[in-house]
Image (cartoon, rainbow over all chains, first blue to last red; front, side, top):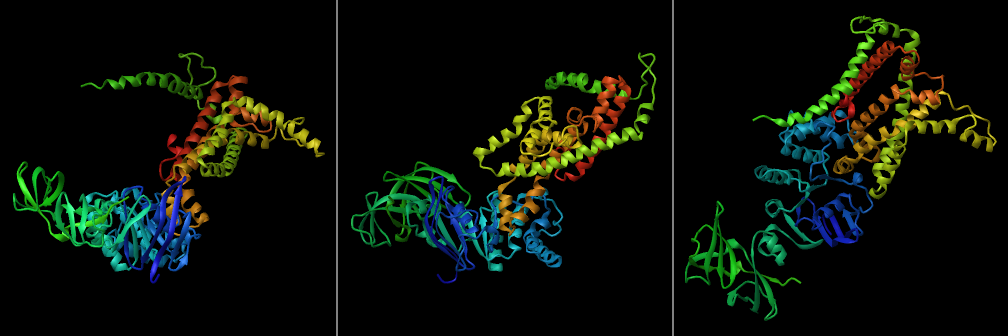
Length: 346
Length: 280
């Protein structure tokens, strides 16, 4: 494939006879920000470790820049990793941690010093060089772990849930910092997370994984708006997933009512999964909606209200800036592009 | 509100006073009094016990003890580190067996184990019989300094292996992977990461071998004969044979000060303050 820096071909991996990765094929383009997203145990970290060289695939090939690297040990690969719990060297200070990779390459002291100082500056850690690792906060350790990897100027940076241990506010800050840095340095980032919001914020491409299988691969907008199956729809944001039947192209029956939609190509009378995002449902006065329901609960979430509204025997999750008190009757409307049709899962 | 839990510490405090503090005080008292002062009323203080220790004949025994203990410790380290490293690398199912084999000899009385070595090393012992069978000349092994060192290495090496093994096995695997990731090959990884991170275990091991080695008297007595008198033998002789408790106590005090000093020097090397050097 053209300008693919990482290419995985039919990767399969078993641990103790249990399949962890099942025929994974994907390619990562140069300067791309790719995120492996999925629940824990879905194989995302294993995929990353195979790229890093810490695990060997049982079957399949790993290509780096067009070269087969299956048999190349991690220390010879031109990529660096930011580990989940940072894995900083506790016996070295901040400066020496960052300089570790450069010293192994036997660079002269002047070059090392220049590179390390530049990193410290980039990460707002000037004057921290002499500090011991255990004297630093989680956020600072995090940045040193990234600096230690980036100082080697890898072609690809692997990040294994690097923000998992940080509090929400710091995490948001670091998300933007990381994204900005990736653009500025022009390095390919492969990022592993279970946090769908993090994936949507930062990625160029998201690879949604579950049970060792790639569920969907695409841009954040595609993944969010056009989930390919119920798992992806459910995992990426909250959603209402209903059973439906295709009456015809562009027409679907849900809960006994017919709705126009934008999907075609299904068989007539085919049973499908229908995904409706909670924020796509709009409240109307009773009697004016496509569906009529009763408000079961209301929770104030800051920006919006989260409501459970029962209509035609289904409890819809609705996010809206409008609010109707518990027990009142309301109508619900939705436009054709709010309805996402998916093939039934097995 | 009164915290009554502190009363639970009282039996322990009493225990410490009776079995540690009081004997220590008596040793100290004996070391600074004359042999003739036999009652509380007739007590005579003197520095003579200490002064008489600082003569070449006794100082040589002291240096020799330190030398033999240091050599034994060094051999324990050279043999023990690779052993600990191999055990820590072994698959979990076999690791416990190996550790068990390390500890197993310690279940037997040290005196018995040392006697066993006498029958192995003796002039008509097992080794010499094997040599004779192979047509080799007899070797005089028992009652040499080499036999003493061997006995100490044999007896104390588990105390070197175990703390190093602990340090190696609790090492964060991710840190080792980070070293791989940053381009370190096996050798570099060992020198720059594994070795420095296992130093607390090495220091604990050195202390736990050196301390009993420097003051042992059974091993040099049984295996070294009269060729290598160590400080422990001297103390034993003064107490048991000569009945000179005062001089023996003074030597014990000198030994204690030397051990404390060497521990505090070790402490300086233990950057992480995790090793046994804190023990002192």
